[in-house]
Length: 172
Image (tube, rainbow, N blue to C red; front, side):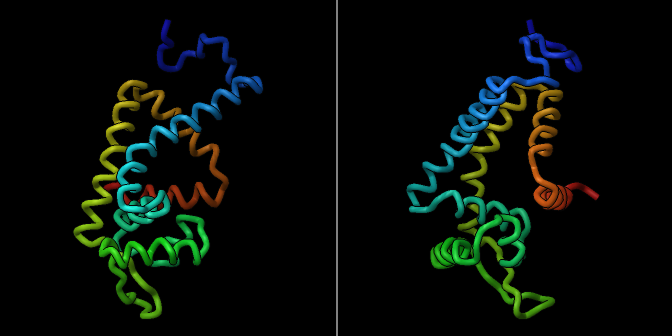
């Protein structure tokens, strides 16, 4: 029997007192879900000799055109050396363009080229389709709960970053 929205789960799971086994199953579900979530983009990326770091850079540059290298470093939480390697490949392959900052000429602002936009769209379409199907199958209450769980797992700084990004796209 399926639970109605707002009901306590009937699968023997008391949400206030989860056992180590229930927590382990949740961790394993996240591992397998992440593997599925990244599998389609990974195939596309491997054709281009790119990895997930390239995908994340493309995603966030697309989300916020003109993002500075410093801001991208902060969002991705990687070292300068690691990001430089990724950005160099994306710049050399004509997917990303770097421009002098408008306010501060020492800053470098990043933009996707038409090719970069097309690749980012191709990568994200597979993930949006997977998320859309999962959200529809789970329903709105489960989606809200899922987001709440994900946000609760973030440390304070990460949650602040996420909420700042989330606000970027909200209508005014």
